[in-house]
Length: 362
Image (tube, rainbow, N blue to C red; front, top):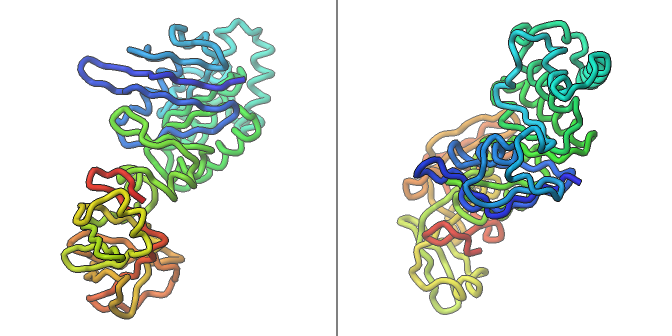
C-alpha cells in the first residue's frame, strides 16, 4: 500500500514559509495533482515527499511508514523533474538503467528490464542514442522510463510537460494517464496549468502561499470553488467575478452594482441567514453559464461590448460590466451580430456568491 500522509508539514527557507502547515492524505493508486501559481509551495511539497528537502515541522508517511527522516534512496519513490535531468554523456539505455545500477542489479538484468520498459513506452529504438539526439517528447518518455524501471511505490512528477509544445503536451497527457492507470502506482503531479490538473487527476489540491485552499475532484473544485482564488484559478477562461452589494428588502433580494440591479430572490433565505443588508459581495458566474439577452430584465446585466474572440467551435465574447471584464462563452461557430450595448443574462441557479474577503457564501 502506497498511501501518502502529510501531517501538519511546514518548510521554512529563512524567513520565508514555503509550506505552511500542510495536512494531506493521498490514497493508494490515486493520481493526485498539486495545483497553484508559481511560488505557492507545490514543488517544495513534492520535494519534501521525495526527501530532497527536510521539513521544518510535521511528519510524512509513505505506505504506512514514517519517512520524514529517511534519505531519498530509502523512500521507494521515483521523481521525474521538469527538465527531465537525463545525463547528457550517457546513452538512453544507461540513463534508464541507472537506478538499477546503483542498486547493484547485474548488467544483463538491467538490459532486460530497460528493454522491456522502453518497448512499453515505444522508445526501444532510442536506447543507443544520447539525450541531445531526442525530441522533447522522447526525452520525457525516457525520464518516465527511468522512474518506472525499478517499480517504486510512488511516482512524483514536477511539471514534466511544461517544456513540450501544445501538440506534444496533449499526447503526453494521454500517455501519462494511461500509464498510471495501467501500473496503478500512486502518483503526485505538480502543475500550474489547471487544464492539465483537471484532465489528469483523480483529485486536486489547490495551493496558495504555502497553504492548501481546497481539495476535491476536478468536478467538485470546478463546480463549487470555496474561494475567489480557486474560482479565478480553475477554468479557462476562469470564473467571472463582479463586485457588488447585497440588498435585502422585504421578501426580495438583489445584487446592486453601479449599473445593474440583479434579482436573486430565490436565494434570499440562505443569504439573509449569513449576510446583512448592504453587505459587500462578489458575484461569480462561469462564462458558459451566461447568455446574451435581446433586452433588459430583472436577471440581466448591462454591458459594453469589448471584444469577440473566435475559438473554432465557439465564440468568446468579452463585455465590460461596471468596468469589469466579463467573459461569455457562446457555443456556435457563427460570428454573432452584436450591438455595442448588450444585455447579459444570468441564471440564478448557476451563480456563486462570495463575501468581500473571498470566502464562499452560496
